[in-house]
Length: 385
Image 1 (cartoon, helix red, strand yellow):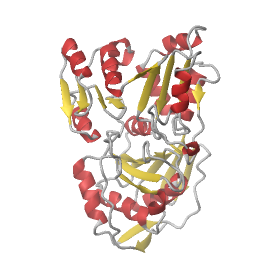
Image 2 (image 1 turned 90 degrees about the horizontal axis):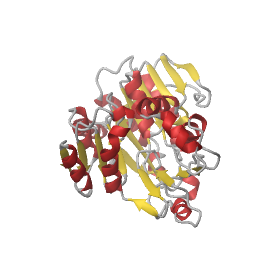
Image 3 (image 1 turned 90 degrees about the vertical axis):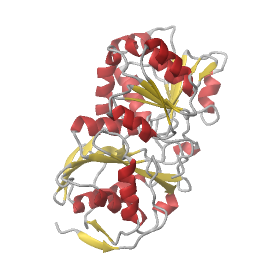
Image 4 (image 1 turned 60 degrees about the vertical axis):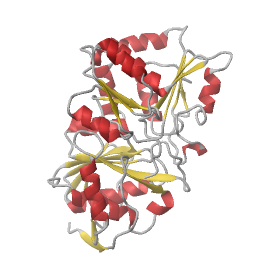
């Protein structure tokens, strides 16, 4: 099928940050805005012809339409296959897991993280490389340079793809495979954790937990992994259906916006353990009965107890934290005799340490944590672009 060449001209303001390009939904809906940026991404890549691209997002407004545009453009530009999450859903950690497990060339993740959704909310797009992590600064600089000189974008004249039916279909010369968005992530969790031990804990009558998905992307993951696979009782998952406007809420896991969960955990009949995650599933808040674990302490606790998890039984290579994050993890690293790195704010700095094999765990002040089993693509406290 012959690609259609659409003439265009540069649109100002398309510089991607650490977490890609984020603007209002109405900005992305402007004619040519999304195609200009996607073409600029493809033009910055080398050697992707015939390769696999992973695609999905957090389900916010415009997610579904953007995916159809990107699929046609990927086919017109020469990708051989795109794996897209069913319904257009794919959390950021799951996208990383799929990219790494499938040996994909890279992936496009459609998310504005913890920013509000809905027609008047935010939308975002970011490119992940073959290691599952965010594009390095050299690549984002090249993408931005392309946005300043783009003159055409490529697409196909084809019907929309059915994103709700699992399996392969054809789009021009490219195969589109609609995948279960949870399966690869669940398989990774099963390799890392002692699922039998967690299953026994959740079955105990004296233990209760709540997980607040905030009507964002992690709802399907929680229902499958906590519910179907681990046997958590009904009612464990709160707000577990992804909605384009996040149910009118703000999917930022903190005491202000996860107020329903906080009220539950501070109530007279509080559960034993609580957690919440953000819009695309790469930030978290951890709670106990009548207390909240700060992001800094969360990283320190993870590091101190990592070897209890089968996936980390051999110990940690090192840890890293962003500069504004407290030094609690520094003390843990000192006790364990492993290096601890302080980085500027921005997930790309963690990515450099992960890629060089110097750290296993990392985290930052805005409730994001990650490790070398999968790469989250987090951001700093601003997250505006």
